[in-house]
Image 1 (cartoon, rainbow, N blue to C red):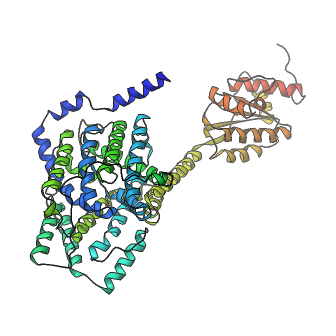
Image 2: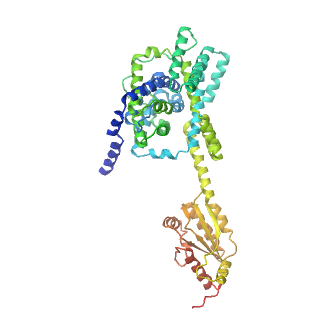
Image 3: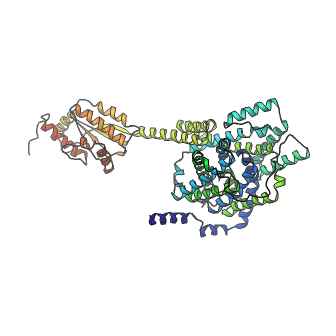
Length: 563
């Protein structure tokens, strides 16, 4: 037990910041400070919008961006990652708010943070590499659609209908708009979205999101557009940390949502960190440290009224493009947002909700990488199917089910492809030391098959059919040296085939059985059936000689005269 505790402490110590992180911060602090300021300007409307979309209000989004952004910057595994509230997380949080209320969301965030820390200690970050690209592209497309649909009530200036299904809620909002149109809100939201999208193509480095929001707010104030509902009162600063929100009576029912939030936070954060690595030279994130940092961020964020956070791909990309080189940039972004919370809350609360809806509509559009989707669709039919299924499941069900469905389908198709590569071919007998006449005589009574590839559950039954349809011979030799892997199902199917051949009076021998295969075959009782006289054959000529001796002993072949 003490040794195990020491191991855990050693792993935790390895996840903490070190001198190397401080060295990065000292390289070019001025450039990092400017990058952090730029990211904060971009992040402000997104934090407000995602806070509103989550159902906990704009102040929850700001608290998340400040608290989680700072802690993830210090303790995370990437020098360039920027964390905060994201659209993907909002998609998961909306049904939790509807069912359990704000306290349920905050409790889920705290539980998810503890799970992420546990995953980091268990070194689970490496498993991210096994998520197929079509699954990532599919749920990104689905998330973009859900984010866009979630903004319809605010973009149309109508009350948000009750319900968890985004398709139903958006349709009811549209029907309400048709009956009571609010052209002011629609104009503001479309104007903000159009300015952001056009500006991003014209000057990608300029933060048009904040410019568009400022213009929309000024227009709403100057023109006295009463139909443009503002954000409302924001607290003058962050609330004091408290555990009073914990919904202890619902911990059991909140476990599944917490697992979903933790899984999403891990997936999106590691994906974002990988994107940041790909945009730079010489940067490489530590996946386990990233999980640790996100875990601490999600433990602390609910204490200040924030929602669960993840690494944000869009803000991280802005951070990289503006020249960030260390964690100081992400930390500066959080500090600037904290100043805004304390000093500019009266100004921020005047921003129209329709303007924030426009920001998120543009964000949803920019999340869709048409080139990547086209490449995935053209790659293979399997990739296209996985992408479409994941996207549809995200829209119709929820993100966690979508990822599970995508992974399950991807796994099934991968197994199918691997199983197709496995072959069972009849091969010519090795001549060995036999004359041509003897070899021809042996070939009349002995047939050899060679396995190539895996012998496992996905394709083993096909081999059973092929083996049991062997013509009327006396001995079957199975050459096993090229079997790449074997599981219990493959061994059982092989055992069944051998038993059927034996009932027909056919002896089955095997050559080249590897140690790993031997253990599997022995565990299901198949190994004894593949030997003759308790002998195992390392090479095919040895098995042929044993088959020849068997045929001679049964009188099928004449005994060779002694030289």
